[in-house]
Image (cartoon, rainbow, N blue to C red; front, side, top):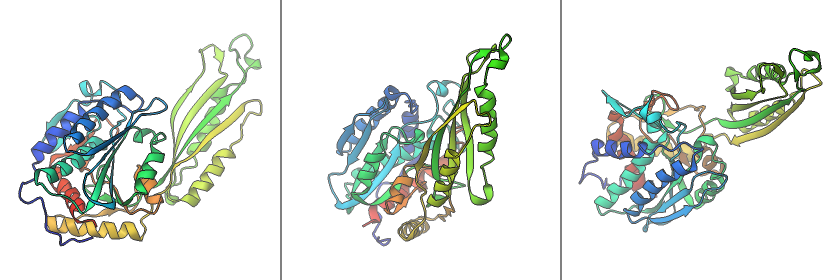
Length: 384
């Protein structure tokens, strides 16, 4: 890594207004994770844009009703190179852009579905690559920009390809948004996902109530026990995020099910928590309890390779005129969890600063666009 490599980007300045225009065009193509056709409309746009840069394109058809994986690679550069990870899916449903998250600018904030998490960062990676082309410059290492279609729902269909591409590269840069006022991410908690199902005995709630065994009543006991597993002091959070059950108000419910999210600081705690989930027992012996799932993303820990890569980025940021800090360990998971767990130096949170991921006030800060894109470009230029 050579910080003293002269900037290639001084001849033509990076234009934050131009970046913002491109980001808005991308977020206007709504792409919720579970809508493969919508995600692929966004993949189509990213493919068109990357082909315009002369990148070698590989498009991997989606599986399990998910969108396609798009891989764009530079024609130049040594290998192993730099893998840039972005995702094009968002949590927001179609129509959000017409309702609670209309695209608008209010002072330094620009609002829109997926603008912070993470189409802003994805577009910035494309823009940085395009800036190299404008300057007729090449990086020492080969660039591979990978667009994932299902990161927000666990990357189940893309994980194997993410890991395969990461193993071909020396560094991984992840364009997830910045944290806590512009901090970079060098560690993330591990993520677990569990599905809990109760099967009771249906009955008419008025005529034969005593014959029934309520799955919802049983699940209420389980939810209290599961939520009680949260331990802030140990960095463990457990969240029952979805629940459904019952068929009618006058029927003792036979089925009830929940989906649970788990965040843990490391693999050892992950194993402990998995054991606790699979040890759950029904309060009512007449109700059947089934638990499935496990750890979805390994913990991403700041090892020596990540620390060195961060120090390099921090030095580049200082040269650019700002102080880059990292977060101790964020609770959010990303595809960087997979690559860091493979021992490949991974820097995450390289996207724009902002706030409100997954909410109806999701926003990025215009003031962060130029400096964050300059940092991304300098990483492209100096990693070797």
